Image (cartoon, rainbow, N blue to C red; front, side, top):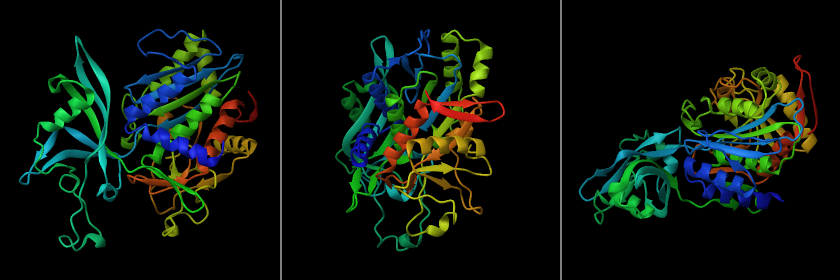
Length: 441
């Protein structure tokens, strides 16, 4: 499949995933369609070699896995991405009245978004709602696809310094407009209830987020770019999922992890720092009849690819990136490294993944922050606090990370699928001396 068609599939995936709960549901649907069996964490896991399975936690994180048919000396080959993106969360008491007839929403920032990118664009609402359902409480996905909100800028005539830099106050400047007199405060809950076809009194609680409804675009005279909300990190979540579904490896257990809450530190029951991955790997081990000693041996030979997008050189600000360790859109996989270990990449893991990409004929690039600038962190080093394995941090180069509308290269999604498919299909044999060999699984 060519670059353009894969990018169209990517934006379709993103449009089906307006919140982390929808992302988990979209991934689950794709796995169901491809023969994976859903496992409940609270039930006994009956696993068989050659089987394909997945489980979820909190309805927002998911781990899927395929079990090889010949596990004489097995280990785990893992990818990790995340389901969430920076946005604004609607508070439990959501409506602000005034001035005069206006009704606004009371929101707070989720993650480190670029505030200015949320102004003057159509916005919707998505997330989950807990409702009374006869004698139980059930969780419902909600996506109000109609444009129902906007965060209006102050006109330049009333804020003459807006183009000289402005310090946004999220409690004041970032409140979305809901009505200008036609609706009343109670109509917000009524809108939620009508969208779910329930009575407002049956709504118990909710996790709701603002959604940018600007449509994704594949653009450029030469179709070089794809722009969309949530490229960080749904581009990697999509690519690694496609790779897992296509993979065939008889000798390993391949793992796909998509965690929630990366944008707010991962320190939740469903985040990369939780026990979710640890719990799943151990349950797989024991359900297949292996001992605890076998588990520790398998972990020592396992490998994690942490997949989270990276920064492309900015066309107007090349000085913000390292002179040599810098990445560009449409130039392939970005290997990220940092001396402060915010990225897990080291010489060993880099050597392994370079060989993988070479075997897949996928180009690679190297990224490191400028030495006088503090970079961000990602999934690899956080998940390694629970499951310590050889690991590398990679991503795809993009512009405007944490904007409400981000831009990436149209070629790179397919590059990621090809590289991660090669990773899943390979047998990476790691020896205690840190020697390794790569053959086909």
